[in-house]
Amino acid sequence: MATPPLRWRCRRHTFDLSARPLVMGIVNVTPDSFSDGGKFFDPTAAVDHALKLVADGTDILDVGGESTRPGAASVPLDEELRRVVPVVTELAKRTAVPISVDTMKAEVARRCLDAGAHVINDVTGLRGDPDMVRVAVESGAGVIVMHMKGNPQTMQLDPNYADVVGEVGAFFDERIAALTQFGIPRDSICLDPGIGFGKKLDHTLTQLANLGAYSRFGLPVCLGVSRKGFLGQITGRERPERMPASLAVACFAVAQGAVHVLRVHDVAPTRDAVKMWEAIQPHRLH
Image (cartoon, rainbow, N blue to C red; front, side):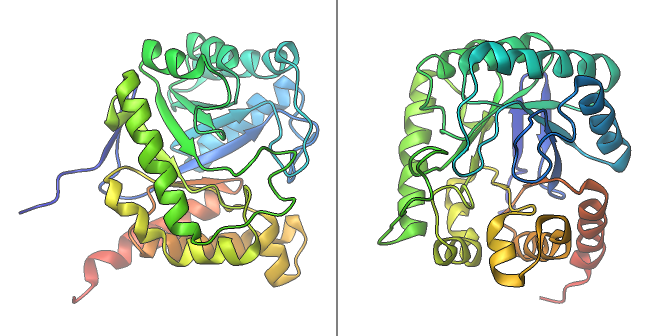
């Protein structure tokens, strides 16, 4: 029996994930994000950068106004709103590419959805703000449910697991059951194993080597490894020089057939990598 197409429903837009992975372009409207903090802090610069990512071929834009790097301080609600709502509003007017809002705050999600966003990308797995689930249900937004041990201030202090893949899988079991019970449709949920969010290097490598374990949920999986610290630990490269390592991990993940959304800074090179995978894949003999 043929496997049914994998789709991700996000308000008025439904992504078909059965053909190739989506490329999600990162738009950080922050002064302190780990890779490009401050570069696009001005709303005009953020919009211009996002439109460049659209020209580079991004399938979805992920706009965030609060850094979640290890040790990052929380941002007051009014400040986060000031950063992201104008950017989302302008992008919704100027591009048809769906928009995701990377936030832990329900009011930020609500205001961005009202402005035209489609997806809530919440690093707390929709646990951090008690109103977030209600916002998702009422809006019909797609949700990205990420695993994080602790919070950005504490997550890298001393994370420990007996079985990181199994424990993250159990977290997804709980979250899927809770969210669907509250009224979020199953086909609106995307899972993110939270690479680097409360994981040591060994935990991260174990997760990457076993991404196929998360296929049992029959849901799309989002992978964010772009320019992250573990790449520097292995290669010795600084953040601006980590694109080749980021692409290597992305290609490895896509080849496993277990990743459907690649969240990246470097959209054009990632699209090229995905295109090469698309060209090679039909020629497999087995």
